[in-house]
Length: 171
Image 1 (cartoon, helix red, strand yellow):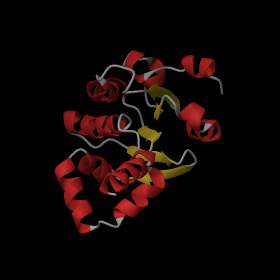
Image 2 (cartoon, one colour):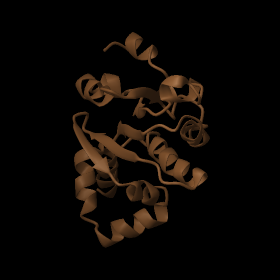
Image 3 (cartoon, rainbow, N blue to C red):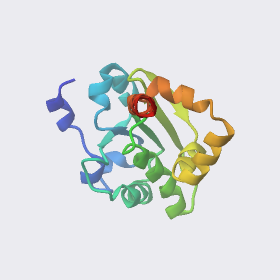
Image 4 (cartoon, one colour):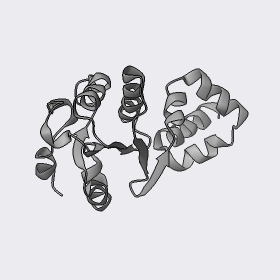
């Protein structure tokens, strides 16, 4: 899939909340870069779903209210959020789906997934997203399980670079 092809797909921020195709649909809210990161996975996830691409880094931060408005106005059957693991911006898409439940005061049929290392699809719990928003809680978890930082080393180039710089400065 080329970049030009992805430009033709609707974006979360620019779709009318009462667009008829959204009514009683299964919606895929996906990172705008997912079709380029893993085209095969994107194609599989898109099957029988209305696709809404989003990039919180590039676009309006109005996603919190936008998803709630789509749900209230179009009553989709389900929402699936798929983002790239490790992207600080993508976390906002997951948080917006949780926030929609809070705003509307009702349970929404939804699932959350991240794509790990551009290939592995992993389901994550809505509570993981809630905790991720509270850095004081994340800090407590790291202190209780410092070995998680070893796993972080597998995924984060930024963390590996930080460790190299830290080691170099202690010599």
